[in-house]
Image (cartoon, rainbow, N blue to C red):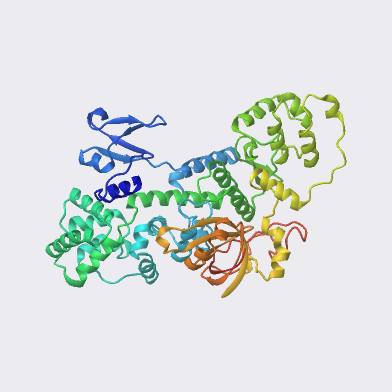
Length: 572
């Protein structure tokens, strides 16, 4: 009975009724006087001051609402600049970097990992298709991969017109002025507002209200009065009717999803170029910034594999050399990355600070000395030992053995450890991944499965050719966007190589449980697009099947191959 009453009440609620209010992250309201004069002010359970009116009510009151966007990429770029200054003595002005054609070319090959706004699989594919050559191209690319342009169907005509160098004539000179710079397609919110103002005769505030009404419309009943008003305005102002006016209306309604403003896209393009430039000229420092701030979508293990591709070595975690952040060190004349103590799972910043302060008195010469000087809890000692922080002082198995000995027992500490076998590559890789989420070894979990995968007939990702293929990879990203009509997108990784597997809706529905939980997938499908299956870049074996577990360890120096597979389930 109570449930029936609740459902009856909900069914009588007016359309668009607000169910509850939550604070807007980064939302700021500006008023000419104290906010309490204009709206009730409350405090949330977390102590945040919050207005109880929503954004539409605030705008109706004439108050200014701002969304302050916080980008961790800015911190990553600043970290990278600090590392460049520390290692090279060069201070970079990231707002005045020179425009270099060579900086854009990695995008054409789909090498986008770590590049601001361009590292998602969708943007990676767009980079290969659009082949940007300047900041304007980057801004357009960033704006294209958004719900508004995607739902409108803007991507294909834009790419075709860019490739051919033109577009179909627009039915009015005003439309050419508004849409000409974006090759005749609707790309930015400002263009939409200009269409409403100059094309349909709406005032600027009225045009913004019209845009919001469009975005809130849920069915044809909501759209009918808006359509009538727009078509009447276009007929009166531009003299357009029939199919020409209907085409404009379809363009407007198709852009109801979220789209960028031009200023937003161009600002993001500058940050994207700064990422590209640093990656091209200072890869070690760039990766240090990414690993310290984690601004993107990829885990540290994938960034470690990108370092492997770029030829940036990883130095071991060290109780005597690691700090609080990733740092660039020169080892053997080559810039390398040193992980911080906090990379070990279970080591907090406070614990790392304690180690750094004690280290000012001199390096630690043994695990026993470390224990005597710091008196750490057993779980901290074990976390550092498991992550290999004492590897330079004694073998890891012995460090784990001694870390478990009771503290303060001198007889126990002086007792020699029993004979312990050393860690093999496979065991060390597994322990590294478990203890710190990445490994300094030039290995990948797929290397451990190379032989059984070959027996199954799976082709390594970088050796996939045209047509149908059967391959395998570690799942490092899963996406199922609402605009994709039920398709899911998995990124599979094999060392420094990645591909995107496109999962059709029927496969997703039939194998949902496995696809949700699987860590490694075997997939079969048709390769679509992408670059050639193998491109040598620097040192490395010609065949990725030359696993360090089967031959002498060597670095794989080939570019990642960004391909897509239409997958049907094979095994997992």
